Amino acid sequence: MEITVCINQVPDTGSAIVVRDGVVDATRLNMVMNPYDEYAVEEALRFRERFAESRVTVFSVGGEDRFGILRKAIAMGADGACLAESGGVVGDSFSTASILCEAIKRYYARKPDIVICGRESVDCNRAEVPLMVAEMLGMASLSAVVSLKAHEGYLEAKREVEGGVEEYVLETPAVISVEKGLNTPRKTNIKAVMQARKKTIDRMDGFALVEPKVLYRELAAVQRKRTCRFVDSVEELTRLLHQTTGFLK
Image (cartoon, rainbow, N blue to C red; front, side, top):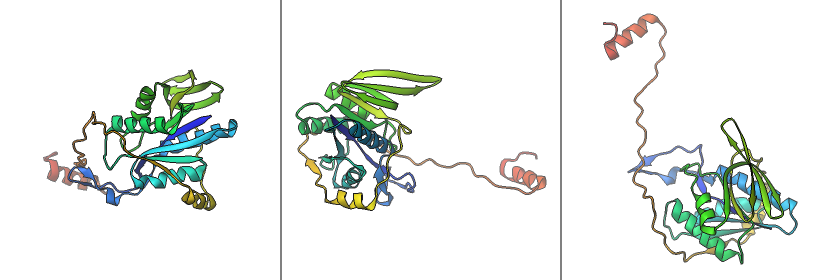
């Protein structure tokens, strides 16, 4: 079974976000693997454990700064990794999906059995790429999966919806995007990290530039208009209301 995982790099949620001239100042950010994608990698590894002669390959679109997350996936247990170089071009979801689709087609002689993605990237929260990849590859797809079982030729999946759980059966090949809580991603140890550093990462370039369908314009920081002050007495509260709002004149 050929199992593909698509991963992305996002700012650590603990990083302070600084906006300069309408864009995020990336020099101040610590970049990590998208948390949803960690669940995707873990699920792929569990599939490999259940099916003999299976292989897990991880793909990411971008530049050499993606090596960190690709090597983390290898340290977790992935068999191989491929960087689809975008030539420094930052595109929209459609551009990213187009490059991923072409990279997957180049890498495999036939369609992989399963493509697993995180539900969304926590930096943009659009949840678009997995569905686009499925459409471009001509594969069945299901999003926001909370339970997944693989069988020969088909998958059983569950999705949580308001007030209940939906159950599905999909023929493979298929593209699945997974939710947090599907599993518990394994931790890496020092030995695995050191071995991952020695692993060769495949690189692909020369992708046709796809014109973005959605253009990024500007990011504006939210202006805080409210402040909170603690007072010790009703008299002080009355005085502050009178001074700041004219209330209780």
